[in-house]
Image (cartoon, rainbow, N blue to C red; front, side, top):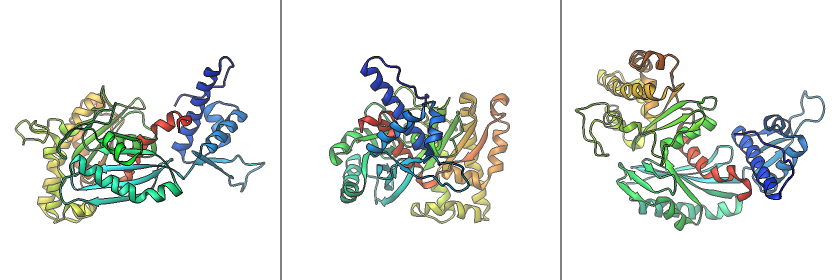
Length: 395
């Protein structure tokens, strides 16, 4: 985030703009760090101590941060207070998939307070998702009203979501087309709702709190029950495209004579790289998906190893194209893609050491995403927090 600036006098509106900007900068530092001293904030922002104290005081009044005493052990002089996200400022996170709806509560600073997965016996329509989520949120309402300040609701959708209004243009696995999901959830819950592609939000979460924190250019690919999606961080910023649809790596062509895809094309990555065959080979169901990695690692069947290698072969084709096109520092793999890599890392590494252009592949490394099952809860919450982080005075 741009460094803060000291007010230079002039018209009140200009000073108000500077104050809002500085509040945003301070809150962003606190949010990303989980806790930072006032002295560190002074260094990070370039503002003087009295200005930082005033800004922190206003954020405390707005119940977005709290101040705690620093550990004075082995310190000389009076330690600077620690500024932390207020644990009562939260967002509700939602992730609909083909076999379940996950609803969570996430605090500023990225702490997942709760996460509940509601298994469904069929793929829900958008209206059914809204009804289920509204019921779950209403069950939480007394607790939310009494113990928290709910900033908003963020939704991580496995599909193409329009940035401007949260319209789900296409979620092929859910069989949704042009569903005004954000608008419907707002009407049903009374909260402000924002929605975006799930993998895009996964990249945002990893960039803010996970394996991508120190990276300016990386790709995130996630594999789940609803297929494969991706997110791109370029130059330290999310690359979402003109309308928010960038990063659909699951629909990269990897086999010209391949099977038909939900999207209407043939030979897409997610028609060849799929979780279901892996589960079937080790005798698991979708409900046991969290056990997939252990089962694959323990399996001695040559059929299991052959399927893992086959899927990694096709994943390498998609990653070759991505490396040549986007020149990332790191590729982060989440969901069952991370599991595939954990089972046979040398196989994928060998393919990526030869297939992309030499100059593009030289410094690329593959890693697993860090945030695990909390990833999309944190990513959806980040979406809900964007408005208050941009302008704390609006909340």
